[in-house]
Length: 225
Image: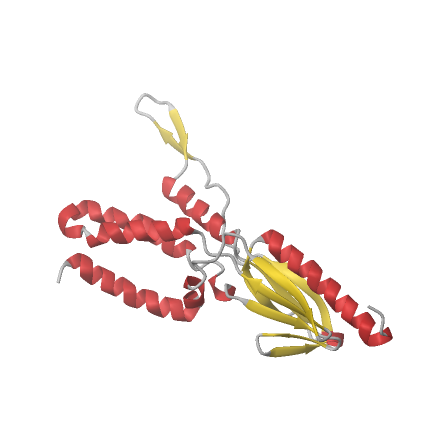
């Protein structure tokens, strides 16, 4: 068995356990989705129903992983050069889990007395608000400049290429990692209703959830929509 194949098997086993622990299986199932998340709102029997479809993960991170794996699989022909594949592989693997935990389709139902999602129910009177959060706090700022002195005494300012590319990958994933959460009067803890969203979709969903909750409250209290 070639070294490249052994590496691939090891990476596959590690990847499976990471996928199970971090929720990456549902993440992989969204690869066929559009690059922007969306939701569809409908009314049925006095209920307001939101069907939310998350955005697919950035294919740039997936491409980096593929390049890294391709290099490592050819270690017998590329020899030492093949191990340069570890760089894109690591960058892709670090970016890939961003937003993965909540990246799955969601159905949110608002009635005149409750909000339901994912098998859970919250009484309307206990709900304080719906919030939009970013799915990762990973640093995506430009890396700091590094000063190098040339043989003739001059100075060269540069940034780490590895850091720059890694942060670009992270930024692309974070752009699709927003989620909408619900907070009740019980405390500061929030429950995620839908994730893997682009910011515009998350904010629109938040506004519509607030509006639907307010409308259903009026119907419940006064019978006026």
